[in-house]
Image (cartoon, one colour):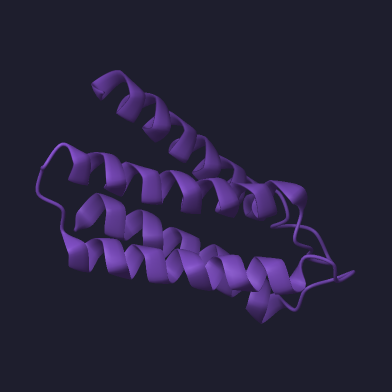
Amino acid sequence: MDIFREIVLVIHFIGLASLFGGFFVQMTAREKVINNAMFHGILVQLVTGILLVGLREMQELDVNQTKVAVKLGIAAVIAVLVIINRKKATVSLPVWGLIGGLTVVNIAIAVIW
């Protein structure tokens, strides 16, 4: 079970890299868009995050439910913003910045909390 959890964790990190990388490569672009890397990254993050919590629960290990709820809520907001704006030719700077900012906040919560 431990090797499976570690594989899922690596995939979770790949989803993070995809989401944040898709955001980061557009830092100097004049027109911001929701690219496929961001879309697929947040979907991978949601699925693997839920799976990681489930695996931890199956092993009867402690789970900080408050932290999980906060991180899931932030990821859900990111997912909604990405999905709603995915087909638009350009995304407003505040929405694009909110996606990147919330991604960084979610990373900080994972590391610091």
